[in-house]
Length: 107
Image 1 (cartoon, rainbow, N blue to C red):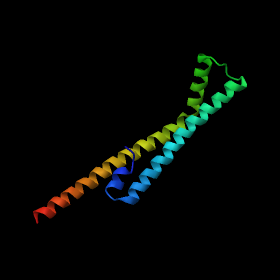
Image 2 (image 1 turned 30 degrees about the vertical axis):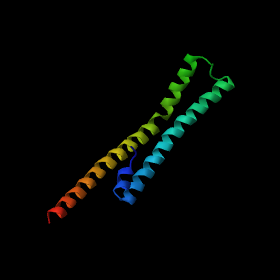
Image 3 (image 1 turned 45 degrees about the vertical axis):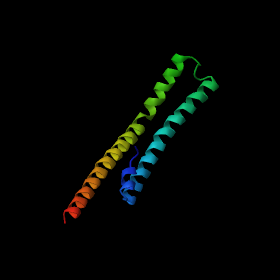
Image 4 (image 1 turned 90 degrees about the vertical axis):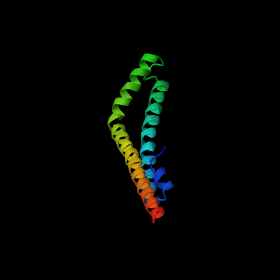
């Protein structure tokens, strides 16, 4: 669902908070780049720099996405890495707890 939630469920608060904060910051960055690009294009349409037709708007969107592509690609890659780290570490932690519970019940 969201990086860090599994850790919070397992009461690993520091790991969970760090993963959640990192994911939230990266998500905010990606969304803000998209919103700023959209606002810039809207301003250009209102100012007459871009014609209000589908082809001109599509071209402006394509150019804006190329300009922002590198920074959002890096942010997206890091966000995916945080997601994978969160899943793997939560799974590992949960398995370790299950094994310790099974060992306790056998004793």
